[in-house]
View 1 (tube, one colour):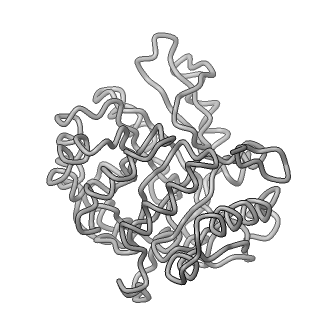
View 2 (tube, rainbow, N blue to C red; view 1 turned 45 degrees about the vertical axis):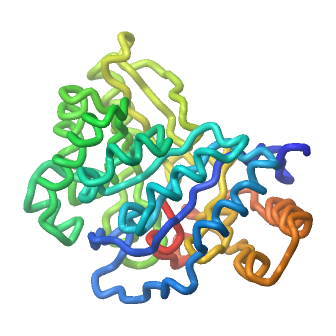
Length: 324
């Protein structure tokens, strides 16, 4: 079969799968305090449904899958799902985004199941600030989880830091930490999806990028993974930093990804409303040909770009329900 090519010539080969909307943290840019709208488990796709749907995507050229959430390690038996997805013909890379609070329990099993890469959220190295941002006093758990990931053989590990007014003064400290630990750093601009996220205090990462470039003698580089980050590295590659800049320098022209929620809704863009529901097809007796045709029609709905800068109030969406 031919590859999935959208109306704008982009090859869609990367799917981010939210395996749960549950999380043990309450990061304000993801889940506002007081949020209680979690889906009921009966609405979630079961492992057979996920395996079937992603297998059909893979027939159309899907190569990369990332487990997201919520916190994916809260999904019961998630390592079994990882094993099944990693074994799908055509899937070349299975990665996982996590807050690492549960990683010490699962790192070895995830590695054995076929997960190849880890992205870990770490917005501060100060315990009291972590508690304010994440809503829980979990810095020690995160650091323990990172050590468990390293011990399990995950390398390199990427650290995701959402840059905002609250932690802007710590960027250099996080850089030093990643250099010391051998982690890859990714700095991320806050996406204005809802009032709470917009109040976090947007930081334009372009000046930060140029400051770090000058300070460390960084040069442009590429890094495997298929995501939206633009990377800089020292000439000896002892330090690599990526920048995910949906506001200051969007990456829509190279977007190769879609997102599937835990309840089977395919989102074609984080910043637009286009969506297609697959659960009714999976549970209504649709054959493979019908689902394959629906996937193709869905990709035709993928918009050219988001409008976060032009219309920041346009979309209200909680990241835990959509997938990171």
